[in-house]
Length: 212
Image (cartoon, rainbow, N blue to C red; front, top):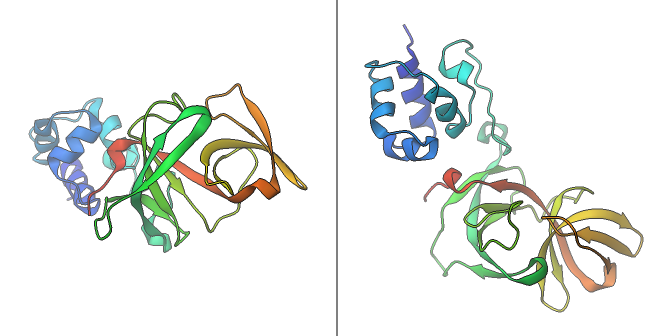
């Protein structure tokens, strides 16, 4: 007969998480995870945070449903999506501009979530210039193979070499209107100034990072 502890352990293994890693992500003690898996104690309110860390629902962990509904903004691997590799980091500067620093050649930097765009990659954000919309240590998932949509965050590379993270407000022939992701400042860019513009598919919490 399936138990709550058994389901938790199975899902933790599926996500390739140690007890210590899951405990850190859920902000509980490793002992709490171990005790639930061993059926030594009840789960209490901690099941909500544990479920969130595992990207599932409390109802699934409590055996109230046999259907695992992912709560991740990313697309599950079961749908044919690929892991999104962390390519490097975005060192933030003034006015939404940033310097994109790649990881050293041959050295991976882990991954965060999944994407159906095979060219998708993630950058670890360094600095609080985009706070509170995007915080230091979080990751932005960039999808070069996807189309941009008004109202979402975008990564813009200008022909002069500058890069920025903005919200796309208006798109019209010959120009776009963008706004700071933390609000307040709008500007218009002519299309001829832009080298590329890609959607930011997700802003991922640091706790969702996976090694290797």
